[in-house]
Length: 273
Image (cartoon, rainbow, N blue to C red; front, side, top):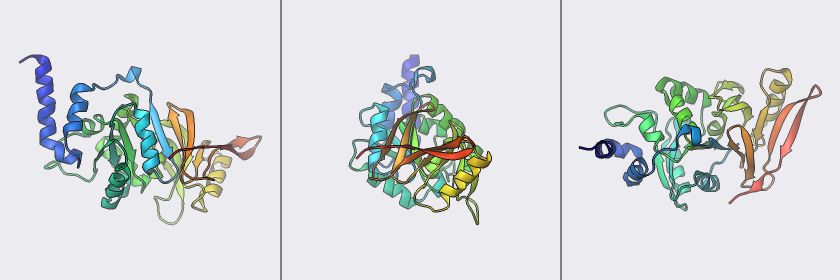
């Protein structure tokens, strides 16, 4: 058997064993991606992240699909922060229904009898990954215990578009404000793909803005980006390429210390639909 034939047959065999864990829409897209669309080398890829402060619905997923540059891109939902909530998974598929995409989901609360593929085999076969909202602290702990954090870094380096809202936006930064612990908002340390800090739900939860100002003003937290619900940012590497929203009045802010005082610089978004 020639080497190329062996590689192709091995890929097909692996998918056949674990396809039910990959998607509700069938295994053909993954086979096509693994065989006919080789991964972009990390050195040649543009690293892309699309976040929102809250509400990563159809409009954001449509924009994410465009960012992949692929026809019918494979988009995977990773609901670790929501403890693999079935309702969240169903909502993701509903949000994808109007779009020309192949939706997948990958649960984190799994066992090896039915999960026959590694995290790398699943996630690195995707064109984009949407991370759910939920408990960011628990999400980070599970990702690190399972090695998902390492695979997500590989995906980012290869040009897989990453993103999400709430815990799905916070997770990509060095740190940010979270409601993941009892009693009060607090600081959470995250993956650090994007430098600096982040505050989601900036206009939707009363405690977010004063705490973010306090932490940045005191030097406990690095300067960073705050996003209202329905507003977000598209990053290439660590550069802001576009600020977007799906609702009038939703804004994005860069929060830092200027001349000894906390300052908010408004980044006016473009509407997407």
